[in-house]
Image (cartoon, rainbow, N blue to C red; front, top):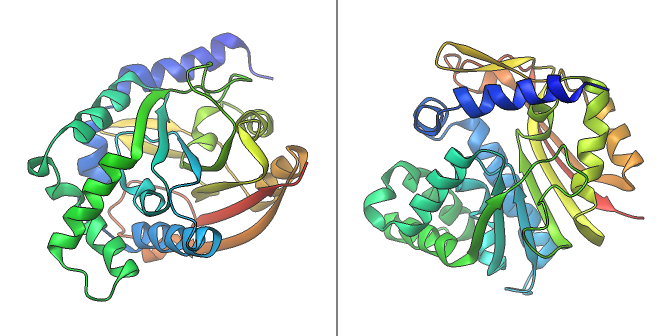
Length: 267
């Protein structure tokens, strides 16, 4: 296992180098096939899992970053969403957006419109703004999170949760592949029995960029994910992939495919 100093060094890289505004402008300046892949699969999961059972699911997003889009569908089915992130600058950026009005919504409007159109064929730009308003009313708080800890939420909120969402997070939080299973187990502990963990990320990637800083991540495979989930008492119930070549070539990412995974806690 990596030493505390090695993990601390990776943490320091994020604390010192990660810039929310750059990240949003570089990776979320416009909706693309990768974003649509995530949002469509999230919509389908919540529609199938929740049905008419609105406002009763307790949902956590682990590693929200400064981005509100991955809880857009969840906000239709729950008014008890907790967002979390390791970095203070990300929590502040997301909290700032949640507290703002429509003047802050333009950058996210294309994502909200896509989600709105999944929910209704008659959706228009005004409907998209209503989706963003819905997110604001559904997110209860934005709190610190450290997936390297056995209690990732650091006792900041009540758990367990019915559904946990994590996007491009767990594989970026560890220094070595052998540490990955423990982060998955730490997050799964926050789930109710029969709860669902939804993970999205990149396969076989080793880094991404924040400006000219190369940010490392472990080279994740489906086998690694499956084994980590099994060891944490979960089984995969849904798996989809999207080839890297369907995303814009100018994005500074090196993975071979995106994945969407839903796992159910069975023990």
